[in-house]
Length: 63
Ligand SMILES: [Zn+2]
Image (tube, rainbow, N blue to C red; front, side, top):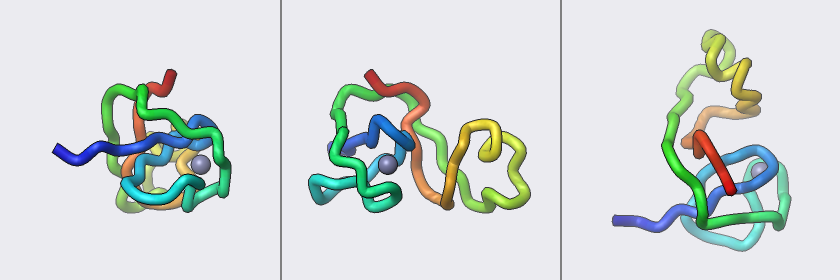
């Protein structure tokens, strides 16, 4: 299984790099649980509540 890193700031999950591709934060963690994928953040109330700034895969919780 692929090992995702999570951004502690926006909770985006990604595989490569040492900075978050979304917000450029370097505050990353590999301790995260749960995953949620947003496709259409404009139409998704959950995405808005979650604070997702772009479509993608996010960690539900980060430590
Ligand atoms: Zn981020």
